Image 1 (cartoon, one colour):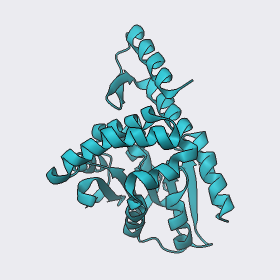
Image 2 (tube, rainbow, N blue to C red):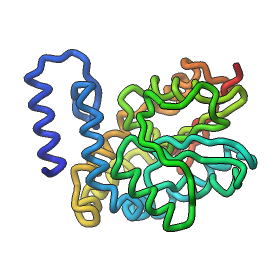
Image 3 (cartoon, rainbow, N blue to C red):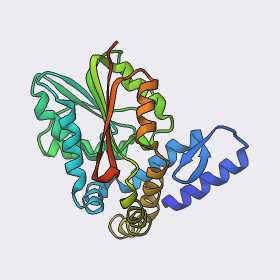
Image 4 (tube, one colour):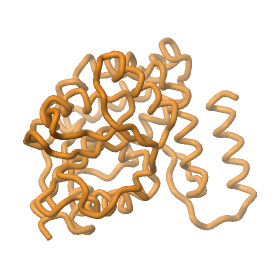
Amino acid sequence: MSTSRVWKKQERRVASSGQKSTTHFGFKTVAEEEKQSLVRGVFDSVASKYDVMNDVMSGGLHRIWKRFAVDQLQLRAGEKVLDLASGTGDLIRLMNPLVGDSGVVVHTDINMAMLAEGRNRLLDEGVLTPTTQCNAEALPFADKSFDAVTIAFGLRNVTHKEKALAEMHRVLRVGGRALVLEFSQPNSLLKAPYDWYSFNVLPRMGARIAGDPESYRYLAESIRMHPKQQALKAMFEAVGFSRVDFHNLTGGIVAVHRGYRLN
């Protein structure tokens, strides 16, 4: 079934259910319990073309953004890192050499298609790391287990972002740091051309390269529904993070948020 047909089917179910607990799926309003399956449908559809589309959509800039983000962690040999929404493993490729043989970077994703794609690519490149399917809102790891927790371009797809941030805080050791790399609010000079590109060019690229314009229309919409820089900083602080800061990249199109667990 196409992504578009899945969305329409889910929307009819929400309309007829009378449920009060809703959330955003792009610009659409859906029942909270429906969002996870809708997001899964998007990433099931795009998994095999995900890396190609990232390079085409960003002109390769996503690789620079990820390198900058990892640099902010200042990882050391022997550290234990949890990467959420790992997808095809770009951050893991960067972080694994930094923690060395005495450390570990755990590869996770809620979506099995993306997890399998990433695991296979990492194995093909000789990168051996634990792989776990899990939900960022309910992590299957003990308190104070990791020195760092990361999530790149995944938080905006989480239904309850505050729960995911609280879980990131819970599994961090005292002194550990959390990092979120995500699309955000561009400056006033870039906003108009960026909106035009997102809603006119991206869906056409998605149709031509991935055969799925609807999924890339959703991705563009989900960026607009994600908390802006200051709002996300406040969410970090609300769940207990300290020394929270953020760096705007490419005029604010992307932002890197970082916070520390200090108690």
